[in-house]
Image 1: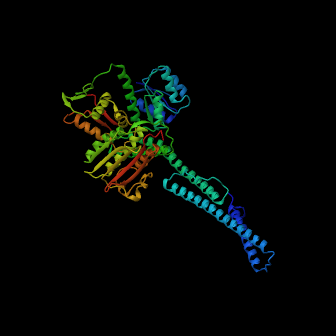
Image 2: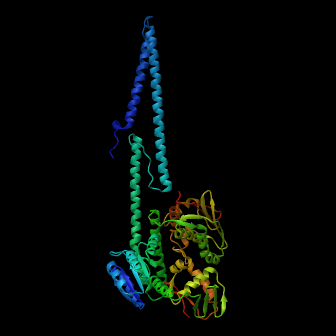
Image 3: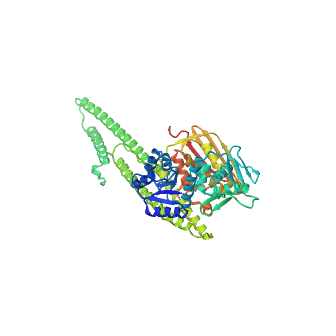
Length: 226
Length: 344
């Protein structure tokens, strides 16, 4: 994937670029808004990571200009501000996701891959059926089978599994699950998500030799592709 | 402010005023005494009687004047002293350092005292804000190196120790974040537009999120949630209820009960959360809202002592109030929100 990183802090830029390259992405970078906007409009990227506070034009202005020009490249805004209203402003300007500095690299990577995946999914016709190995989910009847046997799930468990299946083979972080499945932005006091995942595991993976829901240390979870 | 000099103060003028009146009265009484001892003749008896009458009226008027002035001065002084002491005790109890003694004039000595006290409050506020500012800056500036540390830990080979270190780094980061969020809320800097929020839905979502944890601890969760809509920020409200329910579950022993109740009473939205846990001693019920305060009982439990500070900051941000009371055994948390914050 080709990813553009617009970040003025040299250290942070190095950190992001190094991490992304290690994961096999092709990375271009800019350390100011002008150069960043030029690259974003002329090059074709699968995703853009842009810091909110950079030498002008700032991150949000870049996103607005891109959207104004009909460019729908997935963008992720980095910000040191991190208050709820900043996130709202970022998303309003047309950003697809928002990450508060400081962040763990795994979090950035997971979110970027989710963004890129989402745009490629949006390009294909909507599906009513999700599959991962012998796990099948019917979105219309809201039923789930594993190895031909039906699994009964509560509605939240269904949504949790649906999110994991839509991002199969990708790391999803706990914060991503809270934001996308529970739809709240907050700091969990205890690892509540882990308890929900372990319940889901009990229903989905119990009795099967090959567990589908796997834990990624220090990052989150991944649903095996098969 | 220059030190007050007696001969320039209002008390001096007042004292002089009373002295003049008293000296005049003494003069008149002295005149009576002189008259009483003089040898009165029949022809000047009439004018003498007139003099005595005028003099008597004069004394009565003077006495009335002294009482009237004395009454008003007394009333003014007592009122102002009450205002000063009420304001000072209010500042002490609410911790709202932005309050000042209301003053209408600066002429009299007591008002001057008020002015000095107000200046002192200014100074205290400034100092305290300075401390808060410094701790915020520390939290803010420490976050970046801490993240770097966390990221480096992440790249260590997987081991029990690296896992433990990562957890601790995450804990520290979340503490800093919580601290900064509380400060932002308290400073009223968060400018998110309030939206109508169905509080019952928010509480229901929190309960649903925590149900598995409660089940693991064999706690019974009861809810009675009536439809209540307030104007607010749903993420913050969710966070507040999460912190409260998390505490309730943490401090209630196995087999206990946690009850959430939401209702609208007298134009206020009341959320009560009661548990059958250890409760909080009466003398600690205010202190637990302070940052990093931990009760004896909570020291053995994980947490960083910021949860309730955050709850209070969020509740106050929404124009609400929070009070703790005894559930014997256990704790009841009462939160009252105005029905429609924007209208008030």
